[in-house]
Image (tube, rainbow, N blue to C red; front, side, top):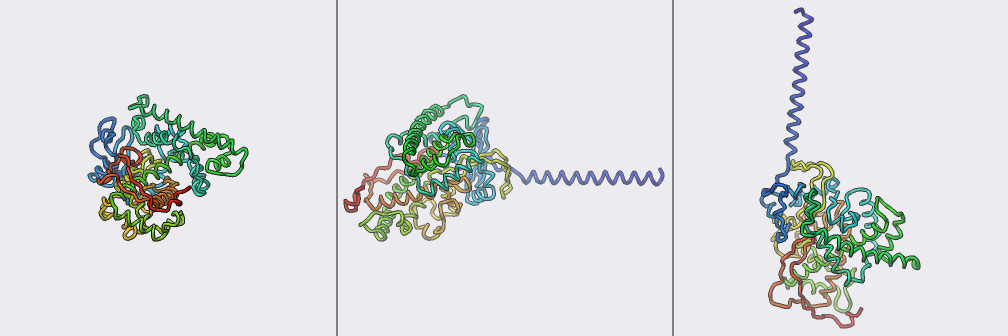
Amino acid sequence: MDTSELKILVSTILSLFISASILYFLKKKHTTNKKKQCSAPQARGAWPIIGHLHLFGSHQLTHRTLGAMAEEHGPIFTIKLGSYKVLVLSSCEMVKECFTIHDKAFSTRPCVAASKLMGYDCAMFGFTPYGPYWREIRKLTTLQLLSNHRLELLKKTRETEKAMRECVRLFGVFVLSDAIPSLGWLDFNGHEKAMKKTASEMDTLVKGWLDEHKRKRASNKEEQDFMDVMLNTLQNAHIFGYSADTIIKATCLNLILAGSDATMVTLTWALSLLLNNKTELKRVQEEINIHIGNERKVEESDISKLEYLQAVVKETLRLYPPSPIITFRAAMEDCTFSCGYHIPAGTHLMVNAWKIHRDGDVWEDPQDFKPQRFLTTHKHVDVRGQNFELVPFSSGRRACPGASLALRVVHLTLARLLQSFEIDSPSDEAVDMTESFGLTNLKATPLQVLLTPRLHPKLYEL
């Protein structure tokens, strides 16, 4: 072998060695990255096919079951609901990262059976997937409807109350096909049949309102409520695959169901808590006496003076958020949390607001009703999604757009009720604070209250 051949051989061996070294280091780096992208721990107890579904029965409150899991597995873990992996977050730190850094990744919503059957095929903007349709309707709702105090639509409450309550209830029930799509033909417990019946009843009512507005609009051009605003705004026959009438009916129903239900739930829990804490009740009424007196009714402009009443509402929302589990979200893309857990696209999301609101590391005496905490240690904590230890209306781009309006209604209604009446329980026993199963955190037993007028009779006149 001459010198030139030896050089060629040495060069070849060196090239192969360098190439092999590069491949080795690339493979090692890839393996290291894969190790770093580990999955969040999965809660134990999953069964084949159904996953953890058996742990969420009709007599088991989802937020409490998930709260117990968080005690064992930590503030971030996963469960399996049929075919779907679900990420469960139970701390304000994890929620802050989710709704800030990864907010866009978790901005879509899976179109579940309730949204399809009762939400006009997911046309309700609160349940529609992320995209141009959601952005347009959210913009319309936020800028033109809620900001202009247009929610003065419903007067026929008696004929609609039953259908609305059933609609809210059905949005919170478990539908087998949502977890195991291949079993979509099986209407387990008859929920889908009930949804179709309720959807038909609600559509008949809302269509009647819409037709009435169209008739009045022909003779009166003045905008009176948010349905009139939408009729004037949505001129196109079809928008993003939906007709203008469908969008109007879906948006109308979405706002009414969300607003009225959250308001009713919060007021019920607030009164229940005050009846079980008479000292706090008297303090609120004394505050109203000092700032407003008994010669006139409380007005919305007075609420800013009633700091303790606002603290009572915040504490109520902390202990009994209208939706204890923030759900109906899914990851549109892969993301990795700062703790190293990799979350693949398609993963569903649940945020346990109930657990976060009762975190002993954040709240002193977290199980106790202490409104004064919002005048001292948590004075600057708000409920509109900017402070992640208190998220009753969710946070991020899919937060409830009607939070501010709901708060105004709750504050004014509670203030007027406590100003106008002495309230008491019909018995000496404490008010039962048992929660009911479902999407909305309803009180399991009806609240019974004795009312005694405390103002001059003329102030009760309409």
